[in-house]
Length: 121
Image 1 (cartoon, rainbow, N blue to C red):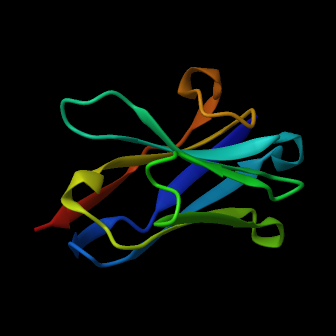
Image 2 (cartoon, rainbow, N blue to C red):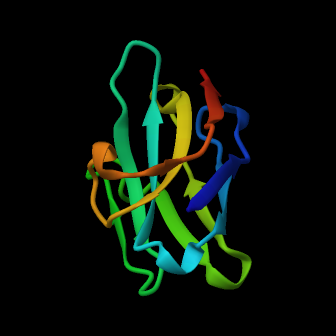
């Protein structure tokens, strides 16, 4: 059993930056990877990034790579998502999830409650 909790969302102007955090607890030693997903109003849930918990390798949505960076601190059981050059289109509810190292949200088993990111124009 794994629990994840996101934090760090808020309101930011276009071009600004935010750093989201995902705190993991429970049987974190069993986590293959942590992933970031987002869902905007009227849109389907989409993959943002994922990171292997042990190896630290990361993967990103093609359209986001270069602006978003994910990292993890195993000692703190925390994953981060650094978001730069934010655009209004990035406005969404951002979720942290624990699961396999892939980009398919349906395969992730444990989800946080989400943290809202709103980018104003």
